[in-house]
Amino acid sequence: MSQVAMRELARQMVEKAQAKGANQSEAYGLDSKELSIDVSKGIVETMKLAEDRGIGIRVFQGGKMGYSFTSDLSDKALEATVDRALANARWTAEDRFRELPGKAGQYPDVRTYDPAIAGIPVEQKIELAKTIEATAKAVDPRIKIIERSSYADAEYTVTIINSQGVDVAYQGAYCGGYAYLVAEENGESQTGFSLSYGLSFDGIDPQKIGKEAAEKALRMLGAKPVSSRRAPVVFDPYVATQFLGVLAPSLTAEAVQKGKSLFAGKKGQPIASAEVTVIDDGRMEGRILSAPFDGEGVPTSRTVLIDKGTLQGYLHNTYTAAKEGAASTGNGSRGSFRGTPEVGTTNFYLQAGDRPPSELIGEIESGFYVTEVMGMHTANPISGDFSVGAAGLLIEQGQLTRPVRGVAIAGNLLDWLGGIDGVGSDLTFFIGKGAPTLRAKEMAISGA
View 1: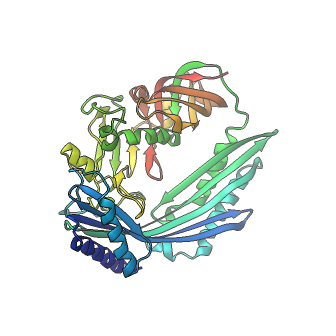
View 2: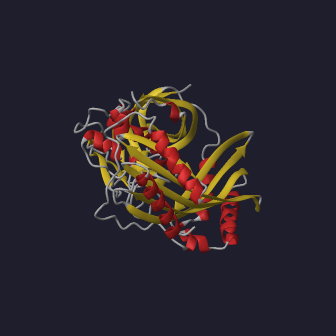
View 3: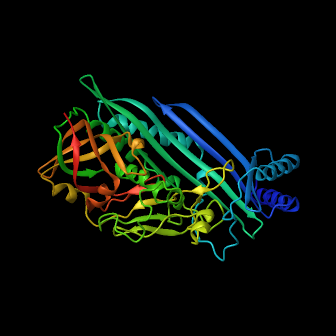
């Protein structure tokens, strides 16, 4: 469906809702297409092309909100969807903070779409996935199983029309490659993975993906536990982003207002070491979660949440901003036309420092370099307490030495933030979250 056609349907739904008695109304349209290719032993194992298209309608009547959506874009179905949303509004609680944003004066100029992705022959995309697999196998004969060697891309159009003057749309596309494999030696097996996603096909390096996944698996062969200790801990960028993933919900105004954030009441206070700056940037150049506006039509922004250790504020959508008497930060998150906007992150990252990772490791006499954590989902986002399984490499005399598995690290997220005494220069993004190598001065390691 063309962008013009979707825009017209969305506009018609808003007009219908207003004519039927809505005080305010909003239509959110999404038209997307996703391709995924998995190869195994040099041949295509699966190839899927999925399309998704639909419109969701929010209506407001006297502080009550109703919502409904449809993937049937016929006139009859669209009218029925509007009627359902109005009927649903009658049953919801009244909330004076429920409102829609007005038209913005200006939206950021964000590059989100490369038409070349859709134009590249599928054979070339298959070849990229095959190259990932072949490269990984060629690294070492101990790479025995390639669980997954994949290519994926997506193309989508987002349209938002509301009764307050918002009338916007944009087109986006991204692509990427992924590898997950197993190395085996003397009856032992270890896994490794790598991924790379971006806004252009030429930016994906299949050789790098395959080589990195293989090296991650190989370096863990022979891993054994170490004795319990307190020691400096260095976090690989991927592991650091997992910690950020636990912190992210607590930095939303929604969590704060519901009493579910460990950062509630701490605005303006130091909550981390001066090495730590955390940013959410919805207009960041070259990132796949960048956009000119959020899921409500509010311009995206660059929001510094923690500045050199001090909490500056929280992420807002229109609703949480109205409750606090603040302005939306453009974080009305909405992944589909099937749901209403929540508060979510865009390109959420811990800002890079100016020290190479080798320097952070080189200053440690005895420590632990963490490359994998298990059970991060069990961390308590309200208290901040965590205890997770960990694997990685022992640090001895400033060098990475033998592989370690079967240990756990425990602590509190606020203590973890406060204990960071080194930030690497290697900021690395994994889809929507990014972090450099991080070093914590000392943590409890439970081992054999």
